[in-house]
Image (cartoon, rainbow, N blue to C red):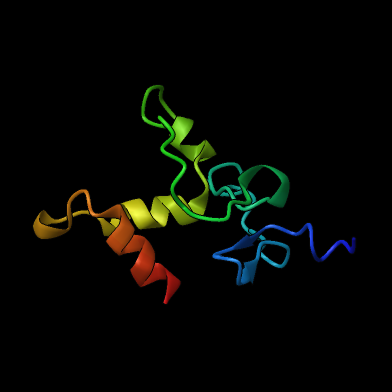
Length: 87
């Protein structure tokens, strides 16, 4: 099998390999490194708010989806937010 077959892509479309954080002060708080933060879908159902600063370990794509779920009528609609991000 080739290495491209084993590569994890977000929504089976976008690769995590080319994403980099240039600001060193944000590097610890934005999760984009492929081995640990690479996911197929931004729906890990993790408990990242249990301890302080644990949300920094959440993949940045999932944090963006969670931020889209705010404000009234969008609360709790994670699948809708994932569909918007996918397209």
